[in-house]
Image (tube, rainbow over all chains, first blue to last red; front, side, top):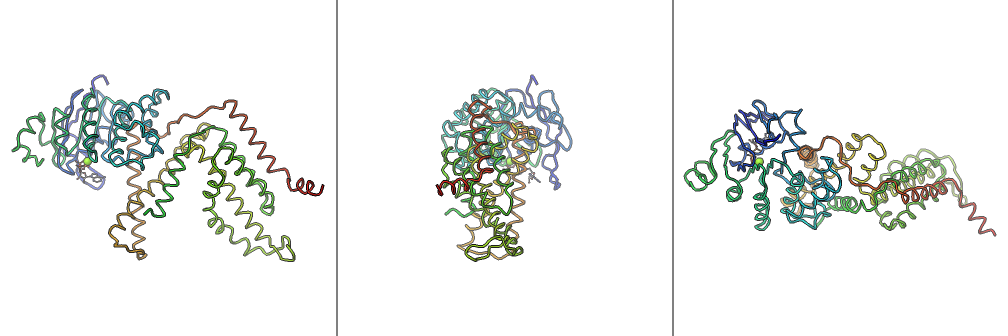
Length: 235
Length: 262
Ligand SMILES: Nc1ncnc2c1ncn2[C@@H]1O[C@H](COP(=O)(O)OP(=O)(O)OP(=O)(O)O)[C@@H](O)[C@H]1O
Ligand SMILES: [Mg+2]
C-alpha cells in the first residue's frame, strides 16, 4: 500500500433491518488529502467510515484502500493502516487504565514493549493527558475521555485517520489542541463532523452526504463562503 | 448519592486498577495449589481448614495488602454459600459429636465446612487479583500455557460484566431523574428494565468489540509486560508451597497441645 488513497465505487450499504444507509457513494480521496464529511444526522457518515475500516463490507460496490479492496480477507491489513476514532469514546475505552487502552493497538501490532511505551506516552502527551495514564476511564471527564480515545488511535500511527465527530465534548483548549495535532498530521484525514468551523480549520475538501448519497463535493472554502449553498445543504 | 450497584462497580474497578504491582507468574500457581489444598480437606473435618486459614492472613500481610481488606472483600459470598450449604443441616441429622451434651449433627459440620472453604478460596483469589488485576490473571494464564482463545473469552466475559453494570448505572440514573423520588417500581417495570439492560449491553459490547477490531484485535489479547521466573520468583514460589503443604498436612493442634501440656 504505497499510495494510501481511498476509493469508493458505487457503494451501497443496507443494515439488517433494511435501512439503506448508503445508496451509491462514489468518491476518490488521494493520499494526504483532508476531507470533511458533512451531512445531517443519519446521512450515512458513520456508516461510510465503518466500511472504510473493514468493519462492515459493502452490500454492493467496492471500497479500496490503496490497491487493496476492502474484504474480510484483507481486513486485518486494512485496519493496520487505517485508524478510526469512534463517535462514542465509551466504546474505545475498556481496559483497566487509560494507558492500557492507548497501548492496546500497538500491542496488537506486536511491537516491542519499549516501542509500545514510547508511542503510548507520546500519544498521551499529544492530547494533553500526559500524567493521566494510570487513571481508569470512569475517572476522566467526558472531554478527557474523548482525548483518550483519540490518543488510543494516534498511538498506532495510521496512514489514514478516520475521525467521527471528534470535537464533541471538547472545551476550547482541547479543541484547539486537536486542530493543532491534526494539522501536523501528514497523512490522509477523513473527518465526519457537524462542527463546520473545525472542518474549515483542518480540511481542504468538503463532501456532503444526504440520505446515503454524495450531494456535494467541493473545496471547503467555496462551501463556507457561500451562504446560499450552505443553506441548500442544510448546514 | 452512589447507588449500591455503583459502589460494587467502583470497588471492582479499584481492585483491578490497583493490580499489576507485582505480576509474577508464581502467584497463579500458588493460588491454584492453595485452592487444591482447601478443597481437598474432607467435608467432615473442618477443623483442618482452620490452619489453612493462615495463608490468606500471612500472604495479605506479606504483600502489604492488609488482611482486613481481604476479609472485607471476601465476606459478601457468605450468604451465597449459606444458600448452597443450607440443605446439609436440614437433611443430615446423624451425630458428629457432642459439646457438653449438645448434639452437633454432621449436617452442621459440613455446613460450616462449606462456609469456611468458600471464604478461604475466595480470599486466596482476591489476594491474587489484588496483586495482579484480572488482566494480569488472564495474562498469567496465557503465559502458563492455557489456550489463548479461552483466556480471551474469559476476559471478554469479565469485561461484559462491567458493560452491564455501566449500562445499569446509566439506566438507573435516567430512570431516577424522571422518577420524582419514587423508591419502588412495579414488577412489570423491572422486567422491562432487565430486558432493556440486556439489549443495551449487548449492543454496546458489539460496538466495543468493533472498536477492538479496528485497533488490530484478532481474537487474542495482547500480553502486558509480565516478569519472568527470576530467582526471586522461584524462592517465593517454593517458600509458599512449603507453607501451604505444612498448613494442609501437619496437625498443629497436636503440637500446640503438647506444648501446653509441657
Ligand atoms: N445498527 C443499525 N441498524 C439499523 N440502521 C442503522 C444502524 N446504524 C445506523 N443506522 C441507520 O443508517 C443511517 C445512517 O446512519 P449513520 O450512523 O451512518 O449516520 P450519520 O451520518 O453518522 O449520523 P450522525 O450525524 O447522527 O452521527 C441512519 O438512517 C440510521 O438510522
Ligand atoms: Mg455518525
